[in-house]
Image (cartoon, rainbow, N blue to C red; front, side, top):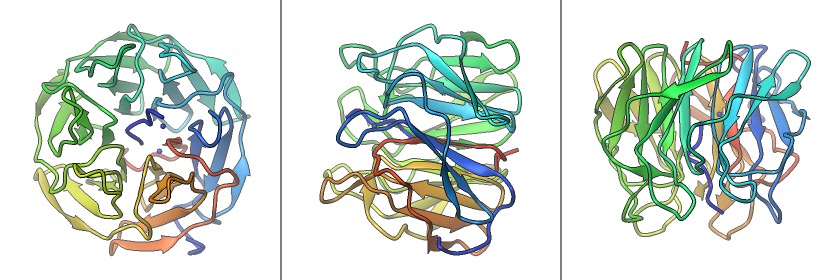
Length: 306
């Protein structure tokens, strides 16, 4: 999952199994509508079905059947969603958000996704949350975050989502996190990351989330990663990615996370990927995407968090 791009789910063989990470949209020389599927077990990359329109700055959430891409810039700020059904690679229109916004983030359970934060037209950072139920495509209001933020990252399990980092309403990179508990729709402060970072990305398991890359408060691109343990609300240093980058997409299953594309320190849209194996915190170089893209958002057909 990814804190969306404003401008935005290892030739190491083996990995997480038969599922795949789906990376969609983003920006290269132009805004993109294309999608790419990264199979965890073989490191193969193949094209998926394109979105109905090119867009970047989306949030995404999904389960083992569908991924929902929400909001973004197309090129104006939109509230529409796109529902990608993995079986058959079918793309349909989903239920619209109540508020058009870009640079939002999403996380969820097997039945629903929560889309939080972002920017509305004009650039104001948001606290609002909206809950998308996959069966029926209904959208209702959730509990707002405490801190307005955009270009944030998200990871979580079937109980709680951690929304972290991003830019605040003063356009400063922040390190704080907030925990959204699905049962009761409660929001509480989480443990801050060690490094303030915007446009980071995150993937994880049922017990931990890996927040990686992004750009720090001095506008320096980062390769570092941090591990957030949900049960204890602790944050620890994790293994860095191979290359400093921002606007990276991420998605994974219970064994590996794929951090894909992004914007390099040379301001070039990247095709490179990093494959992060959670056991042992091992990073390896993955297979390249076919298209260099910054700000692609990622969702998994076999979610690692539940």
